[in-house]
Amino acid sequence: MRECVRVMETYPEMPKAEWNLWRLDQMINLRGMPVDTTYVAHAATLMRASDATTLATLKDLTGCQNPNSDTQMKGWLGDQDYPMESIAAERVDVALLDDLPPQVRDALLLRQKLSGAGPKKLAAITNQLSPDGLLRNQFNFYGGHTGRWSGRGVQVQNLPRPDFTIAGRVGRHLVQARLTALSHRPRSLERQTNPLSWLRS
Image (tube, rainbow, N blue to C red):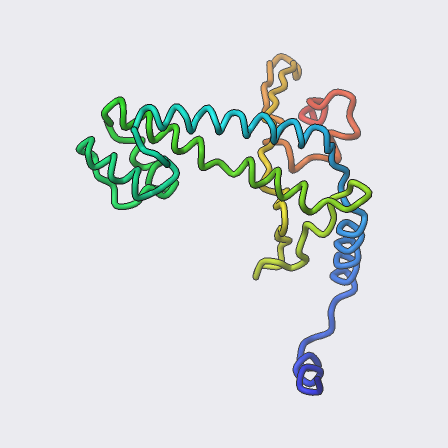
């Protein structure tokens, strides 16, 4: 313990602004985020049904007893004269850029669909909910070596974002913009009734 204190004493004093950021991080983690548990449960049910249909289709297409098995799928691909050393997600993405036999392409697309992270993400949300229905402790302060936040648990920062497009007239020009591209001006957008009004400035 003394050694830990001695080492820590060699570090420069934490700036007040950084302490304030740390306190904000603690407030966010302790406060938590509300979760629509009914929505999550229904989404999980739909995903399970979709995965079951996809798995059955893949079984019929390949004849594999367990298409989730890398060994069985690689064996089937070899039988189709398209051997693959690995069928990891990134390798499948590259393979799909090739001019593939139709059956191989269909099988890889189905396999890709089965390997989605959606069901695991929903399970993580359900498993980490507090009794009051809030999701807490999802962020690590200074999680990256650059000082940025990082995620843990559900990794909510990696959830897909809806990509809305807005259009409007600014002077004589018709402007179209993706809201996700305007994320660097969130406060401006919140203050304005018309999200495009800040473009005039």
